[in-house]
Amino acid sequence: MSSEENLSKLGITLPPAPPGVGAYIPWTRMGNWVLTSGQLPWVDGKMAYPGRLGAEFDVAQGYEAARICGLNALAQLREAAGTLDQIAKIIRLEGYVHTAPGFRGHPEVLNGASELLNEVFGDAGKHARVALGINEMPLDAAVQIVVWAELQPGGVSF
Image (cartoon, rainbow, N blue to C red; front, side):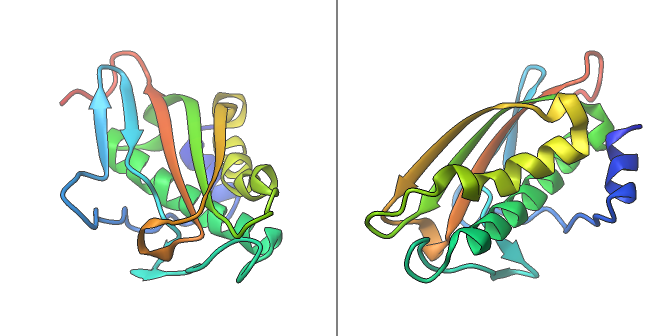
């Protein structure tokens, strides 16, 4: 089953790819790789989860914030490749969790994005990952992710 068919089977409708909020582009291509800029938990142009894990939000809410970031990353990958079916492999997910002192649930939070990628891409969604806690986040977002993906050989050219 293709990645686009998986989205439909899972009942997932991707949002429009969010625009950058600064002097950068939301994704870039390096040879056969696409790299997203940091994806925040935007829903309909609003920050869905402003605040810190371990203070304003618990692990379950952080998981949902990371999943929303993953949906936005998928929208960026689709925009970059034309279709998610052009994605050969998810290489790496970098996750940044906005934390209160003492919070240690970073892996569980970022599973929200990782499990989404695995659901959509199957084995090609399995990726390396970085999970970091930080004490400040742009726009007070609870979570931010960056996705590295490899395109199919001979796919989209720019």
